[in-house]
Length: 86
View 1 (cartoon, one colour):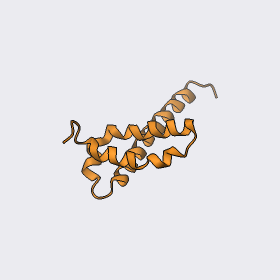
View 2 (spheres, rainbow, N blue to C red; view 1 turned 60 degrees about the horizontal axis):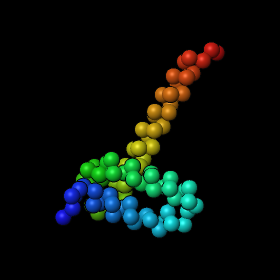
View 3 (cartoon, helix red, strand yellow; view 1 turned 135 degrees about the vertical axis):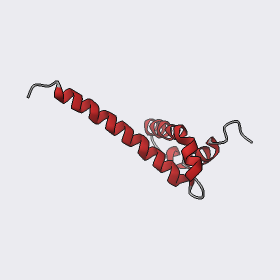
């Protein structure tokens, strides 16, 4: 039993990618690990979908996080363009 039961699937999925990160440059590895840690925000959703393919749910969490970042950046660009004389 764990203190954070919804993190079990996420932890297993993230740890399963450690070999992938191990062969990266130091900077890339650090960035990859940061990206993977972001999945813990969606631990409950991943837990619901994880069976039997934990990585599929993990990828969906990462895609969702990237989509949010892209939409945030687009909103910033649009706001900058509105204030810019044409």
